[in-house]
Image 1 (cartoon, rainbow, N blue to C red):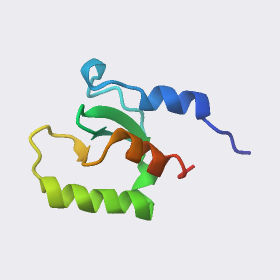
Image 2 (image 1 turned 90 degrees about the horizontal axis):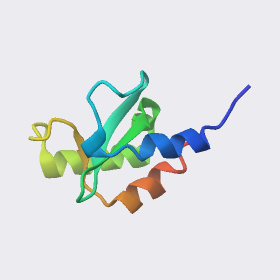
Image 3 (image 1 turned 90 degrees about the vertical axis):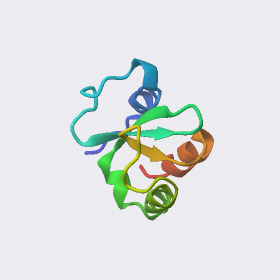
Image 4 (image 1 turned 30 degrees about the vertical axis):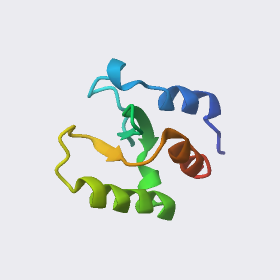
Length: 90
């Protein structure tokens, strides 16, 4: 039996970098930072297996390398692009 988390998903994605804490990421999820404002999104780790997300990770490695000063995973695209790519993963 499956269920969808559309209402919860919006709340998870809406977490703002300024109000976030390192320990508030649920098990099975990870935080990424997206866009010029470095908006924080909490995403399921299953996204890492998606080819489109792997493309974003490749772009991240090219732009930032593996030693980024913010310490978190920063995705070099706009928030709109990120949401359009990830909306189809569920």
